[in-house]
Length: 247
Image 1 (cartoon, rainbow, N blue to C red):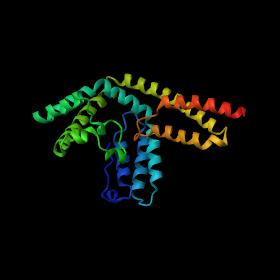
Image 2 (spheres, rainbow, N blue to C red; image 1 turned 90 degrees about the vertical axis):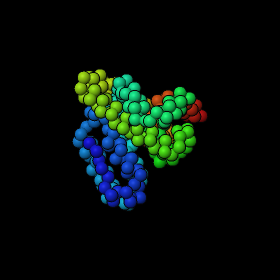
Image 3 (tube, rainbow, N blue to C red; image 1 turned 180 degrees about the vertical axis):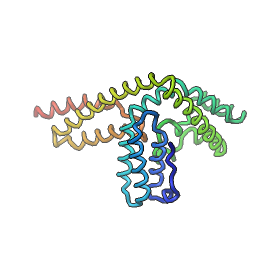
Image 4 (cartoon, one colour; image 1 turned 90 degrees about the horizontal axis):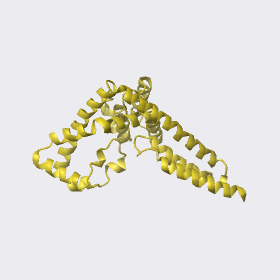
């Protein structure tokens, strides 16, 4: 289901963020609760019609959508890597002319990546940050590659969507279950870190800020919840607060 933006939304003070919200809705994986999808679509329309809506309210809504869809997105991305990534690459090369295809293949062989078109939705800062892709190709070449990649992604997504709702649906369902359990474990650790924040007025704000950064990883606009960092934070603050509380 596509959530097309009205012309009025283009002139919204937060038009870029609302466009990201629409992209998030468009990319929700199969299996995401349909009533929740419709609820978020209503929120998007409300934001589009309210030019005074605070940016933070939009950001938090997108973050919550990322949190609600996290297990399905993780499972979907795993399935995509297993069964559709090679198809995407083939489709991309098919849609480039010979000269540009050779230059692109050399770019990849040299370790280059078209990183601004990864699975994660990019925020505004990242979209306009220089990257090897930005500097390696001319504007015309970048346009041709990005258009070819969009077509390739659409074709590959059609393949994987058919698989996860068809002959590979059981494999996909088990992955969703696995990531749902993983999500519960992460959430338990985050709650423990929040509990530690409440033990000491001295360190409360510092720990609370660490929690905020970690929780932002649920959002589709972030790289993901950094579980290793979460474990390090728990270990550090358990040790720090144990020593602090003995004083």
